[in-house]
Structure formats: structure tokens, C-alpha cells
Length: 234
Image 1 (cartoon, rainbow, N blue to C red):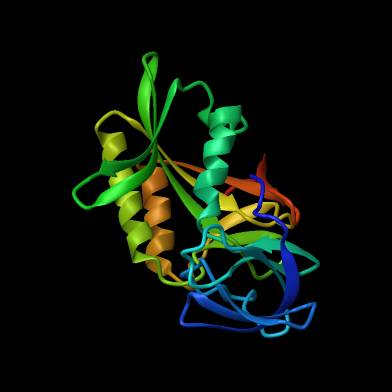
Image 2 (cartoon, rainbow, N blue to C red):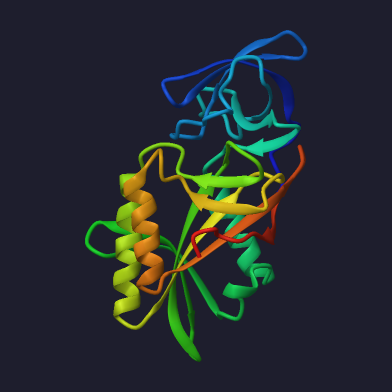
């Protein structure tokens, strides 16, 4: 996925009200960027961190910049939570996720259960329907372990219960974590920040929901899903 160019580098002044980030660009300009991330962004919202922002597309945007990348722990980290679905769509089309390859049709934003929508439904006449939910992950606290979530994620826990219900009906269901980092070689649910979600993920896996985690290659030009990493709860 090509990022909107040209990205501008700066330093984070503050991230506030979840969706706003004040940034001083390297050329001295002070701007307020849209922060497309409703989570806590633990370790990635520290004032002074180098960041990269993209120019807004279209003339209707109130904020002229979007926060895209943070330089942390010696590398680039993607914080835009809109990107994982786009990255997944590209990877599915290219057959870059072997566990999900071979489906003839990829449908997006399909109703699931009574009050949810699933990110993708994969269909093929030769196999059961596959319900695919995608979550963004960018938290790393210790070692090379990626973790999700970085705050309480009640809605995400509900999605797991609904995926389990699809398995009970005879379909396939997959929870995919797209890790917008290059420095992780394992994935785990973050039980201390959200024990309910961690328990829900374990229960869903026990009910037949497949858990996949994929890391990304990231540059200031593009992001792409690159490699599978193991879930430590498996």
C-alpha cells in the first residue's frame, strides 16, 4: 500500500482528544494533524518522538495532515488504524496470506450477528464461507512481543463471540492481527490491560476460530503485510 506522498517529518508535541496531534515539522511549521487511532497508543504518543505525517487528500478536510508513522524503538511504527483493512485487501488479492488464499470472492463490510459487521467474507464454491475480522496492532512493551489491545476493547471481544457463532454454524472464522511494526516475532493478547479480551481470544480459539498474526514491512513510501508470526496463546 503506497502512502500518500510526500510525507513530512516532524516531532510530536502532543496527542490529545484521541484524534488530534500537534506536530512541529522539520521545516519549523507547527501543524495539527488528524490522528486516525482511537486507542491508547502506549509508547507511541510521547512528546518529542519523531513522526511522519501525510498531506490530506481532497479539499474538504479540516486538518491538512494525517499522522501516519512514529519512529520508536529504532524503527517505524504505523499508527493509522484505517490501513490494516486496506493492507489485508491487497494481501488477499495477491495471495500473500497463504492461510487465506484460494477464495474466489472477497466481500467487505458484511453484516455479522445482530449488531456487527465483519471486515471480510471470503467465498468459494469448493469450501466453506470464511468470516475474517482484522485488528490493528502496534503495541510492543518488552522484547519482541506484539500485543493487542492497548486499552479495553469490549467491541473486539464481542466480535470474537460472533466469529465463534459462525464456526458453530459450520463456517470458517479467522481473527487476523495486522502488526504495523517490523521488530516483533511473537504475538500475545494483552491480559493485564484487558483480561476480558484475552480470555475471549482463548475461548474463541477453543471454539475453532483461527488466530493469525502478520507483521508488516514499513517505509516512508509504503506499508505491506510481509510475514507470519506465532501467537503465543496457541
